[in-house]
Amino acid sequence: MPIVLPQQRLLLELIVMSGDTAVPSDDNGTVLYRTLKECENKGWLQLHPLGSGFDKASVTAAGRSAARTP
Image: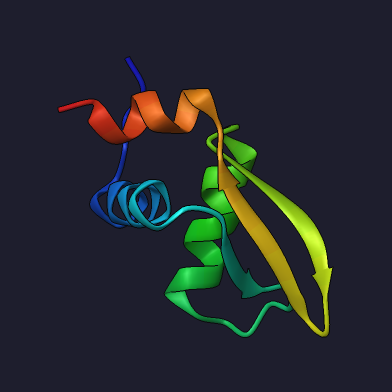
């Protein structure tokens, strides 16, 4: 059972509800960027270059499962 931090769960749930989302591709020092990278490293998100300094964030099957983990 993965340990999902509150900010990770919130991000995963948001992207699951809204669908693929454009996110900043540059490290701007925010909690959002750090959380995106944490989730990507755990295999919960996939980030694909979109252009103009943005990536497309997509939740994987493992990310959907992690978002539902109590």
